[in-house]
Image 1: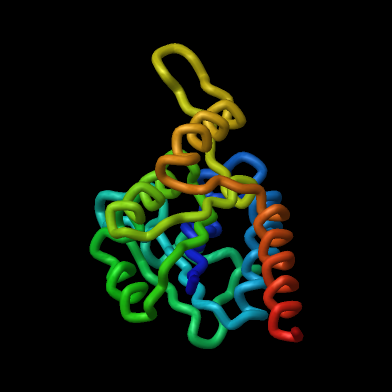
Image 2: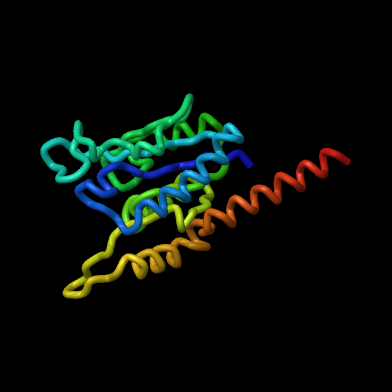
Length: 195
């Protein structure tokens, strides 16, 4: 099954010094890098999604600022594609669906930021477009949320989002499990070819 990696909004704005530092973004970045290495080794398609605020309306991801830039440890290589978006949904007015279809992609692996906003929206939209999704839960992060007078800690937000997406909208997995499953599958394929 031909798959593509979709890395959503891993931008400077979400790290130390940005306008909206997320919960432990460096830990999510480490897991994203592991997955990216696999896709690069296999020469599978990689898409970087970058949120760009609408001029005059945005308070973050303002065009021309450092916050819009991808994290320096995730610089696209070769034919890897960067698509800019203005909405939480990575498919909306970005051409992502058309590019995936042209490449005959059958499955998506999704990771990035923010779990309860752009990740959630993108994963649900992927199903609308007919793409099954593997969501790498430890390669995502977000922020705590306010509901009324209560502050919902990010780990609670994360658990609720993963629970709501798993099974219906995505196969939610830890990165290491995804990588182990791939390695096991590759070994089985090699054994069959050697027989």
